[in-house]
Length: 485
Image 1 (cartoon, helix red, strand yellow):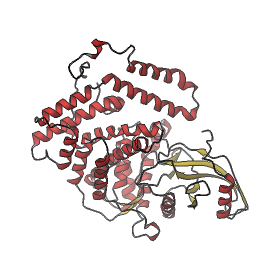
Image 2 (tube, one colour; image 1 turned 90 degrees about the vertical axis):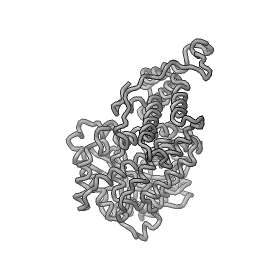
Image 3 (cartoon, helix red, strand yellow; image 1 turned 45 degrees about the vertical axis):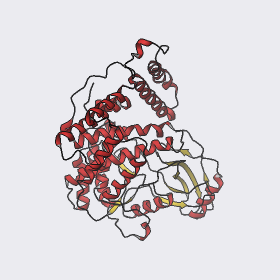
Image 4 (tube, one colour; image 1 turned 90 degrees about the horizontal axis):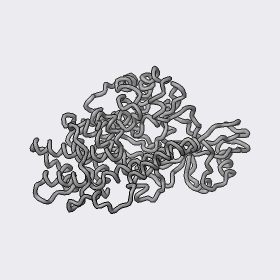
């Protein structure tokens, strides 16, 4: 992609820092370019010419630093560098960590520098490239062995004393605390978290977890695994946690049918892990951590949209990620209530106002409707403008088209989904006290577990609510999971 300048800073100061820490007489650096990916961190690629010192010659490097807004669970750059160094020391394939800097006077904030890896981390490309097909099970196997190698790192480690220890109970407490602060109730998440509470696995000794070990966070150069990226969520945890995260449906990209990161079946990943650890994977434990992974991904997606809603970050990619929480809702229902899969329901009837007024018949708004204009604008963007957009902004154009499609579907649906769910809640409670927040609170407390018909009715309501939301947010995801119109 084209070079994008860093926020104003003295490139000479960065060159001086690199020279001082490498023993070079002088270091000249190219104009840094912002690399793709890195939702909560910035990665800047550049070339550095070291004159003398232990890195003499031209080196392809990456400077990693904080984005303008972030997530509280993320490690600092200084801490992430220490994790990267520890992983490198036990032979995990990672970008070689070179230098770290806590001095904010160099570029305005802390950073570290590492070698740049060859290849691509683009999940959609990796999961759909025909040339990679024969190699994908082997790649999954090698990733399992990489994870086994990482888990050689265990507490106590004085150099990693800052890492948090997070077990299932701590995860659940964090999920609950976040939902308590979130402005909208999330009944499916409350119900799924309740399932976690009642199905806790026997604990195992903690190991170092990557906590973002997935397709999209490893680099492939052809079929060669060149390194695992993005260690900012690392911490002490359960040995099966990273396996569950890798198999979370949100990281399968274009191949939802391949459970292991969209590249293979679970067996290939598990075989590599078991060969490296000598420990057999318990399917029930792995299932627990896959359920937890979907809840965690939903929470992270909502936190990303908080960076727009609360943090003020004017970035469409960040803002729209919150809509992906609905995908996790559907996957949680498919995992935990497979027998409750609903039959196809007819589309909602034509819009009626609160008092039964036919808004179309009144004809207050001028034509065409806003939904029609949005759809037309999207066609213009995709068919005529996208071919003119520079390659580095194609993803932005697609995000804009996605946002327009969501807005068009919401405008077309009007208030009908909310009215339907309100009516179903009133039928469910039958006492005039119905609200989505009350329903979410009752699911958290397990209020419907003692009566199977009541529990079945509650799950049916969760299914319907999720289907309605995804019809607006991502009907393609519904279709990809077998829920056609």
